[in-house]
View 1 (cartoon, rainbow, N blue to C red):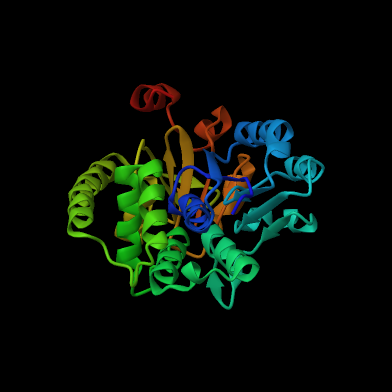
View 2: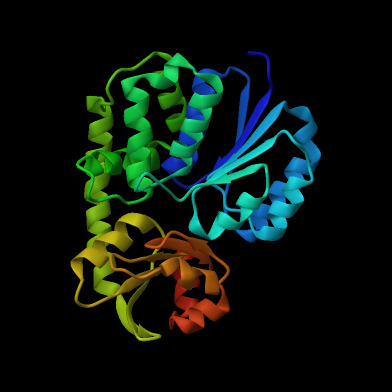
Length: 310
C-alpha cells in the first residue's frame, strides 16, 4: 500500500506499543513516534502535527490523553488525524470528530490497542488481524493495561509487559509486527523470551522487597497512603505493595521522575491525580511531580533528587 502513515503513541508500556505493532503488520509505509503524556509532551505533539501533518495521508494518535485545549488545537489542524484512547479523564475529547475514547465495552475495561484493533479490523478487513495469535496478543495487552487480575491469562500478560521492559520499544515493535506478518497461531513465548522474563522477575521481586522496607504511611484526606520514592517498575511495585498491605494502606504513591498512584480498593485515584494535573484510570493513574505534590505527600525533595536525579 502506497499511503504514507504516521502513528504517534505512548512510550511507556505495551499498550502504547500495541497500536504501532498492529499498524506496521498490515501497512508497509508506516513511521512511528513515541512520546509521553505530560503537558509539555502534548504541546510538542501539537507542534509536530502543525509542521508534519501535510506529509502524511493519515496520522493516528493512540493511548495519549489530550487536554481539552490541546484537543481543540488538534481538531483544527487537519482531517487526516485520528485519535484513539481509553482513559476516563479523556472522555471529553469525544465531542471532536477526530477522537474516539472508549473506557469500557461489553463489561470489559478497554485499552488503546483493543480500540484501535477494532477500528483497523472494521476499516481494512485484513485477514492477518483475524489470526488467533493477534487476538491473543490484543487481549494480553488489554489485560495488563487494565490490570485485569481476574483473567486466567493475567500472568502471561504480565510476562508480556516484562519482556517489553527488558528488550525496549524498537525491538518489541519489530518482534511482534514480524510475528503477525508471518501469520503466527496461538500466542506463546519462545524459550529465550521466557528466560529473559524469569531473570527480570527475580530482579523485580528483590526491588519490591527493598521498596516495602522504605515505604512510609501518611494520612491523606482520611485515607491511609503508602508513600515512597521509586525509579522503576512502578506498576509492579505499586500493585504488589497494595496486595501485601491491604489492612495498612488504601492507596500508594510512588514518586520518581513522575508520580504514580495505585490502589486495589474501591478508590478513584484518577481523581487524586487530577488535583495535580494528571489523570488515568480509577485504580492506576499518574501525574508530573510538583512541589505541591511533594509537600502534600510529605516527600523530601532533596531525597528525591538524590535518589532519582530529578
